[in-house]
Image (cartoon, rainbow, N blue to C red; front, side):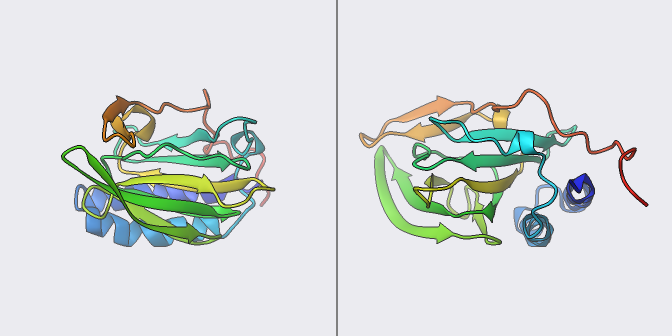
Length: 195
């Protein structure tokens, strides 16, 4: 396992948020190539953070900035796994590393939820979300016979953010997602790296 790739992403993304702060467009402009490079290599994600659950998708925390300016998580989608319709309230970059995701986007206005369009995100592709770009969607595993894995980078500690689930009846319910993991990968131990 090449954990150095994850460490390199964290280091570079920290520089991006330090330099561009709350300028969403600039953070996404400079962050996308970093995430694209990370997801095109499939040798760094620890196996413990790629385990599917039989009944629901898993959200494993890989890293959270000490000031909660960004977080990185692996999402593991078993066959048939899907999210409810939800929002994020912060910017986000979703990169597919294995398999594919189906994304259905929505708008919500005065209690009315309306589907806008759907698309598939395949290996190496990155999808963006934010309140300014479009923030309400549902995501599903595109495959019925295999696990899909995506890597998500958000502009906050996404597992602690107060967000919303939207019902077909137009109700907006608050939730905090949390994480499926209680630990994070150790990015800083170089004792097993070869020279």
